[in-house]
Length: 276
Ligand code: OGA
Ligand code: MN
Image (tube, rainbow, N blue to C red):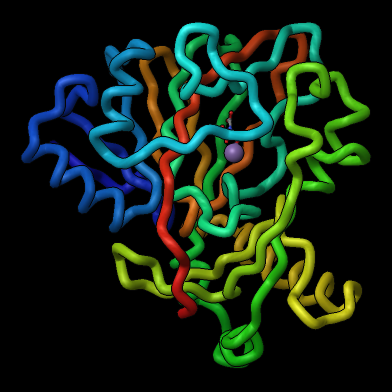
């Protein structure tokens, strides 16, 4: 297995393995690479849905997303679909998956099934590197804060997706909810401190006024969204991406209007978060 950094501060490309036929030793190596880099990219995988499922179950335990449609054959595989007639895409802004749950998802494994001729990259951000680079003053300001993470403003009755052409493929409007988490967590595998807030789901700091929260959150978000912490992955047939939701953000570029894109996603369960 060869693991090479994908960009200066974000992600790694893993080559020389097939996820569908991974040996136990390779799985151990992969766990270490995952803990070190937070997001792994794979090319040229022969990885049909049954093998996607099998790999996910070897790595961890699966959680099913409350809002996405599943594939007809595999209820644990979610479809991330955009039809060529659709304007709005899923995950078009920076977020991490399931941070609105009391125990947020550990990771997501995304597989390309139908790709546009060009465009449709997924961008990632490294929240451990971003935390390390915060000024001492900012680190102090956020040290003991907690933040509220919600999905209601996205998937709820008046959420941003409800009045778009995505609405009909989403369910679970009545299952919205929120959770609070420490703003700085210690990553359970790497032991690194991580900035655990994201633009998609974090709505405010616990006990703070909304506008005060907004100002500091926007400052943190602008800090993360810099070239030294981010990268963009261009999908090709056979590409797979596996990211850790506790220490990365991602967003799907919506720059392929008039073309279809279909990805398969499996989400893996996490463990309770620890304050950093
Ligand atoms: C997701 C997601 C990004 C993409 O599956 O959680 O945000 O590029 N997808 O499809
Ligand atoms: Mn996502």
